[in-house]
Length: 249
Length: 164
Image (cartoon, rainbow over all chains, first blue to last red; front, top):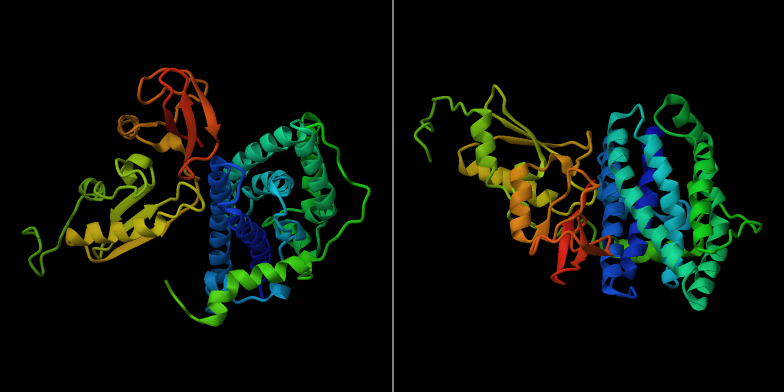
């Protein structure tokens, strides 16, 4: 398997899984406008995933399509970070998960827009605009929830406490990241951390929320070791293609 | 079908008339705008073998209209006798609302959607009463490209085509 293919897959998986999670929430948001927002954000992530998986399929050239990669890979073959597979729980969890991830992807896509790989750079430049917009939305909600009522503050703080254990994994580069950074195709995620800290801290201060960082950190997603949550998500997402192989609209 | 379609007679169509033909292809979600008005249509040319090469770019990564637009482009060109069509989708440079034509902006406003501003420091005008006071209701509207606002003067809600 080519290294570029592997790299594209992990970038795609983050977006595909988050998109699926957000889609589960459609029709359940606290207000209609947020339902639309969640649907739109999910669609942006799905679009990015689709373009990256199509390109990954093309790079590999073994006949598998983007749909095959999305619907016929098992849990162990998915290499998304653990953060994006975490369950929706409540609105505060959805916003906190999105906020932590948007702050990461904003920097990631900006950096990848300068990739030596023309196709990846094109997808990244487009996604960078969308990520900045998503971050504005999720930051706005972090502030409203954190600086809102006692209930919304407590829920936002609780969501941060639950999700913070998945933060370090976003910036823990491995051999593949290092190799991609060295060739100029990718970026070393460690380099994105200080900017992320700055982005997150300024919003958390305005939101009267605290970081939740002294706890245990989880990782493994990049190697296909996932939390219990992913299997359930894939079960639902892949059911149709698994039960009726080759089914088309 | 026009008289140029006599077998064995080469059909030469200028890029200008190809653009005119493709002017029939409209955005399914905002049907007053053509793909040229939106700036989605990046390039159209006729290759030596008669194949029409069309280059398009999506507005947003997840734009659900792209498959429909590709089919429409093939259909419209086919109706004008161009059966060989090759459509390429490009991502770079990334689409921006700056590419929307001034004609497109006028059509959009008449349709009831505040057009994207060329200068984002300007006020957004209500497409109904043209008052410059409005507030943001939601960053995301009925489609990815729009935000929802409400006019402070006439009180009507309206969509604003976001600048990106």
